[in-house]
Image (cartoon, one colour):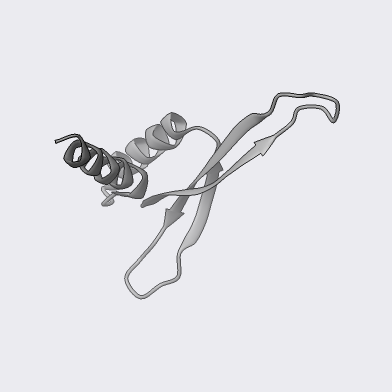
Length: 84
């Protein structure tokens, strides 16, 4: 199971609105060795996507690769190095 950050965009709820809303999307994909990735579902919140990944990985005993968490760890480590 693979959780990937897909896109981020700004949307205005109505054409006359002056403020926008940031929309992020996360894809839940199945990947196998030597097989193409298969999209299972697209989420707009990370917490829901992570809950789905946890439930599926426990039920089917599948390994999880969370690219979102990996990127967050990397950026946190780089930020800590810059502060030193």
